[in-house]
Length: 150
Image 1: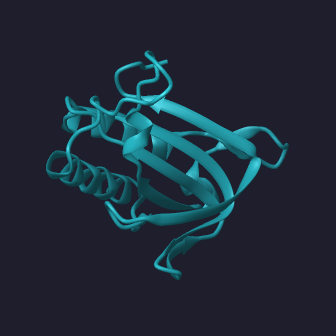
Image 2 (image 1 turned 135 degrees about the horizontal axis):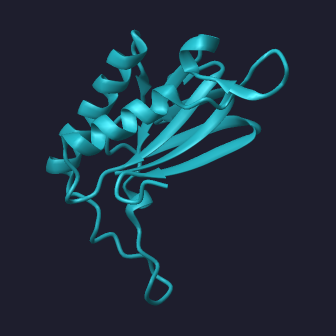
């Protein structure tokens, strides 16, 4: 499972020309689910995400997590995060889990993040053509991969 995490001032998802969801200050999290991902991957990444200290404290040091700033979370599924660009110029998505596998794992990830935060994480719509807008704060953008725990 892969996450692309962006600290945002605000973010929104539009579907079919209408606002589907939006958040204020917090994190926009793009989630890619791999064919071999399990609940263990969800536990690891959800825990790291919620405890990630990337918000400024009173001294301007990134030392606070989501709960400490009262931040919101917008979680959007994005199978293209599982792209492999090793060969040629056309990305391969063979590592991405098919929808019938990835949707329940994505939903489980959202539930786990919500449980850990103590409030609901906002989402896009799985499989929809979404227009995602954001104002990246910093910019702060972090990549996490449950199979490459750096």
